[in-house]
Image (cartoon, rainbow, N blue to C red; front, side):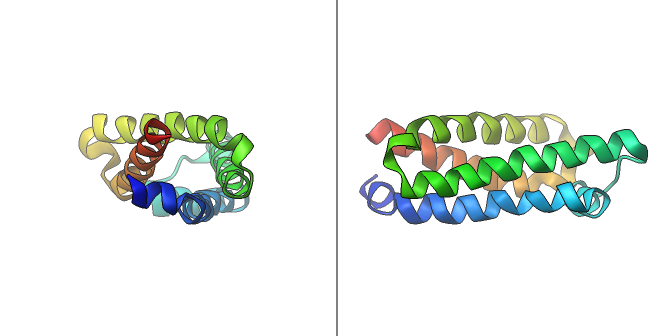
Length: 123
């Protein structure tokens, strides 16, 4: 627990950079969707959903970077991130083999979410 508390700045910064990388989906939705999920949603609706998803996730990452520098906003930003990351992970694992390609991202999100939980419980 002390390791997490002592290094929360770097944990937030690195996890924020990783999470904000999903902003790429707002620019190249088909490419990111194919790499992340192993398939694409064709058409304007699929592109709109993926662009929106990438923007929301990417902004969450930028908020985590901000939280690294401003302790006064850490708790609400980390809670927001925990809900999103754990919900996504549960969805991927509940889908079974359908979302097999997204398991790597789900594991990363699960670990980050649990580390954030440990930090918040410890403080």
